[in-house]
Image (cartoon, rainbow, N blue to C red):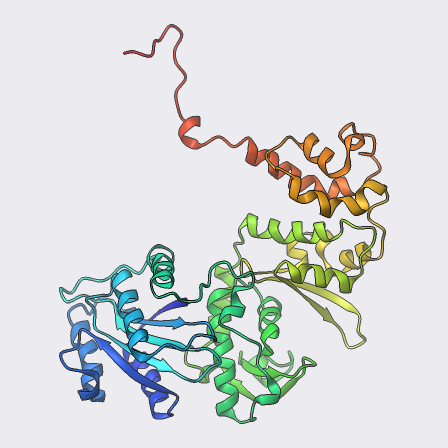
Length: 434
């Protein structure tokens, strides 16, 4: 189960979106919470006016709509009664149990999911705080619901996006605006809100994993100058196919302005996320020789997709790493010069390890390492006592590659909690008893 929460300025827009799906026969309203009558007796106006009347209690709340999608594994096929039980439990646990809400079951994507719409103004006119609701309330609720209802768990999957999202099969799309829009919407709904990307190349590096492209056109095109944006489906060769769709036609309006705001907010990357990708790359080079194709395969096993950008002549000019575990995206240059396209090609073309103990022993010994141990013991575990005695320290290029990991390990081992560091030293002659 994966829950995604979005807030907005118009409950009407969220309501009309779900009701339009009902009219298209790709969704149905299966239930409601805190409405005076049963769902099958409610008309269009009754559903909407319940929200609008309560919003009048506090007109100062501008961002007042709440739109939640709860997504299930493709293997799951739950009854409407069970979906409503899940929805009611989820809303109660995130603090919306007393709010009016509607539940829609959608049938327009490759995985089962429901949409819940509500408002964040209480019956007493007070506003519900949405700050960090995903981390503080939604995540604990998700884990409890997965256990209680015995759902397929999202946590623990190496590539968590595979849990709800599969690449678009372009061969199965009947190329018309409706079919293409449905397929692209499914991808955008997951990628735009889940991944951390700071530029168009980084965003497209993720979207291309699911056969979608965000296209601004050529720099001299009318669309580019007008700051327009279209989304397109890609075939198996990565070439655009079918009908392109304007960004403004999608429900969540993933326009250029929207993306530029996301780029700015995503620029701050956690050091641990960067270190994970760098270490994965460095560990891949812990062998006598590795080709670029082999590097891509090794990283993929660790949940990292490597996107190679080539010009018309087929020359590699850029490289982007998509980490599906942390959902972070990094251009090679962001990680450092030795992770750029040029440096990676050079590293792939050179022999990285010459000492015999390094070539085959590393993968066998990694599981024996306790990273809280001193650096000398880690080196000895990997390469033998000769390396602990620094016999090969000067000649081995591998030591440079491991330096960051080993240094980080020592820092972690020597870490002292704040509570202990902050204790005052006793004055001379001071006893334990006051």
